[in-house]
Structures are given as structure tokens and as C-alpha cells.
Image 1 (cartoon, rainbow, N blue to C red):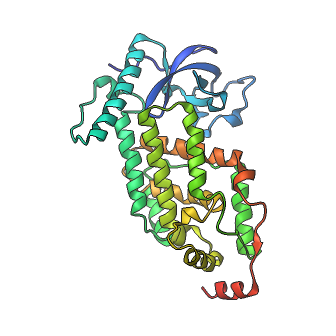
Image 2 (spheres, helix red, strand yellow; image 1 turned 45 degrees about the vertical axis):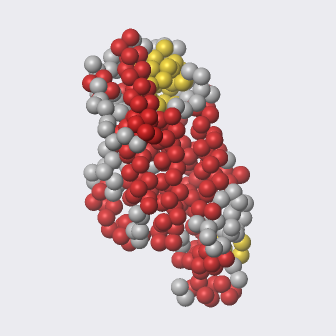
Image 3 (cartoon, rainbow, N blue to C red; image 1 turned 180 degrees about the vertical axis):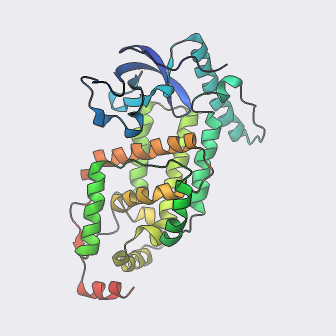
Length: 329
């Protein structure tokens, strides 16, 4: 039994069901967008670029704060029908059953019902497996920047991996590059809050959505993968040459600590520039990548919103001795 509708013809204030991650939630249409029309009262810059080529809806999830309102493509918004309400219930029950199976250590997986298997975002188990794959890949990450550059072009031709970085963070990255490579300055380490603390604060913020068990598990897998990938790749991919001596010094001075306990937002945001290369090396399908991408972009918006809290106001000047050593590395 397939989903009932796409949502063409929905009007403002219409009751509907909307996908967020693998599950469906009761929602309301706040605005409608139609390409090649005037769309009075709509700021097109607020609509994700990938959603501007077709009908899109600004939706509000019932019971969630308005800060979670978002523009969705029409295929993620379904009509409020008995058939779709049954699908909502089946997806929720399936996610809970899969969670119980995992906790019980069971290896058998229940066959998907036709309704769940034809849902727009597929099954929650598939998404949890994809999130787990991301974590596992992060554990094994040992690529150098050169290796990543050589392979990424081939994979990018097969997958649409485009992480939207807010303009304020793009400016942050540009300033970061100039401070270090042109001004011979450094971020003072260790940082507070560090990356582990930032990710924990983001998790607390995200959990205000009243997530179910399955969605919480997906979130935790993704955050664990980001932290592990940062720890594995910092020394080989994310540092500028001028920072390598500082990296050696700070890791020696903080035995037993991983980089995500020492570094902060300045280096975390660099991760998302190289992250598409990592995603292109997974076996995740496009829809699963979209779920991961949605979480990552939510984290980026969180960092941008709290930029004054998480990023240093100024970098420190390096000493002549440090410069002499670092230029020789």
C-alpha cells in the first residue's frame, strides 16, 4: 500500500503529515512555494536551493517550537488520510521493533511491509544502519588529504553530496585561513568548550524536538561518527602546515586526551569542508545521505547561531621560536 498523495494543491493552514528523518509527524502548511511564480511574501533565500526547482512547503511540526519550521519538497509532505495515518503508525512500530530487536541482541529482522518499504524515506532500520556505517567508517579513517583529493572526484560523479555551510561560517573559515597562513597566528589550546562539549550541547538542543527512540539512536550514531572522524583525521587532513608543531606540542601536553577534547569550533567547522569526500566513499544510498546531510546542516546552523559563544574572538601570536620550528616541518 503506497503513500496517499503527493501533496500538490495543499493550501496554507492545511493539516498534513511530514517526514522528518524516517518517521511521519502531524504538521501544518504555513506557506506554499511554486517555481516560476511570484510567490508574494516569501523570501526565496530561506528556501534550500535544492528545493527551489519544484513545489515546496514551509511546514510546522505540531508540538515543536517554531524554530524547527522548515521548507520541504512536496514528496516529503503527505495528505492527512487514513491510509497515510496507518503508514505513520507502521513506521513508528517498525522503528520501535527494530530497537527492541537490537537491545535484545536478536539477529533476525522482520520483513518490511509494502507500506513501509515504499515510504518516501524508506525504513528506519535502513537509516540506522547507514548512520552506523558512517560511525564505522569514521573509526577506520586514515586518509591523507592527497588520497582524499585523488579519489573524491570519481565518487562525486555518482553521488549528490553538497553540504550547505551558512555564510557566517564561510566567513569564519576565510578568517581562520588568513589568521593562520598569512598572519602566523594560532588558536589558543586547549579550547573551552571543546568539540565533545559542543556536540553534547547540540544533542541537548536537538532532543527538544521530543525525538522517539529510533530517531535518538540515529542522532547518537551520527554525532559519534563526526567525533571519531574528527579525531582520526585532524592530524592528516584538517590542520594547516603552520599548526602541526602546535598539534605535536598540545597532544604531548595532554596525554590520554583525544583531539575532540582539546580542539574547538574553529577546527570542527573545517571538518565539514572535507566531509563530502568521506560520504562519497560510503555505500549509503542518496536518501540516507540526505538524512545525514540534514543532521550535519542542522549542526552547522546551530554553530552559526551560537558563533559568539563557540568561536574565539581573536587568535594568539606565535613566537619567533615557534615560527622557526614550524617552517621547517
